[in-house]
Image (cartoon, rainbow, N blue to C red; front, top):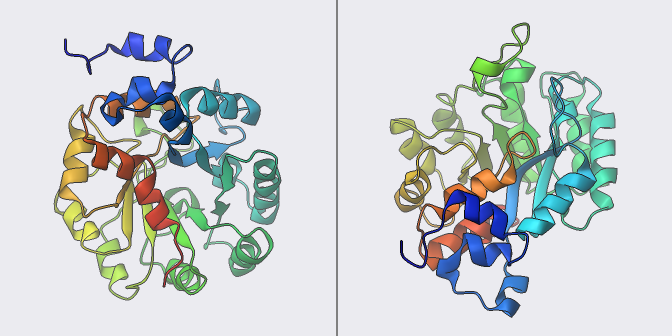
Length: 292
C-alpha cells in the first residue's frame, strides 16, 4: 500500500479527527491553510423528506452538519417535495427560506412544465428568489425531453442566463414502490433538441453514462454531467478524461445516498490535481456563470 492508498473504513473514520479533504484527496498535497480554502461544491442534493421513507440525513441541520464534517463548502439543493406536489410555488418558497438560513446552501428551483402556469413558477425562481438554476423531473411529471413546454423552459432559462438540471433518476427501479414505478428519463431526444439551443446550459443528474449518446451530449458545449451514479472505481476518471474540460461536476445525490459514497469514489479514482480541482469546484463555476 502506497501513501495514497487507504481503506474505505479508514477514510470514513479518519474524517472525524483529520481534515476530510486531506484524507479523501491526498494528491492535492494540502496544507492546513489550503484545506480551509479548498472549495468543494455538491451540485446534486435535495432538502426535506423523501416521499417513500425516512432518510438518516433528511433534516437540513443534520445534512449540513455532515457536509461541514466532510469539508464541503457549497451545496446546490432542490426539494424532494417537487416530485409529487402540484403547488410548486409553495415548494420553492419553502426551499428558498430553508436555504437562506444556511450560507452553504444554494436553492435550485423546481419546475414542472407539465402543469398549467409553470411559467409563473419559473419567473418567481428567477425574479423573487434569484435562483441560479432550476431542476426538472420529466419521469415523475410525465413528459418527454422534446415536449414543447420543456423546449419553452430551455428558451426561458437561456434568456434568463440560468441553467437547467435534468434528474434522470431518483431511485433505482428495483427498490421503487410498486404503485409509483418511475423509469429513468430517456435522454435520446436531447442531442437533437440542443441543436435549437446553442447557448443553453444543462446539467444531467444521476445518470450512468453509457454508449454513443454520452459523446453526442458532450459535443454540446452547454452539457454538464454529475458523478453521483457513475459506476466502478475508474468510471469517474474515464469520464473526466473523455469529456471536454470543466464539464464533469461533483454530485452526491444526498441525502438519498450518503455523501461519503461519492467522496470515496472520487478518492479511489486517482485523479491528478487539475482533474480533482475541476471536478470539485471548477466545473461548477463554469456552469454557474452567466452566459456572456
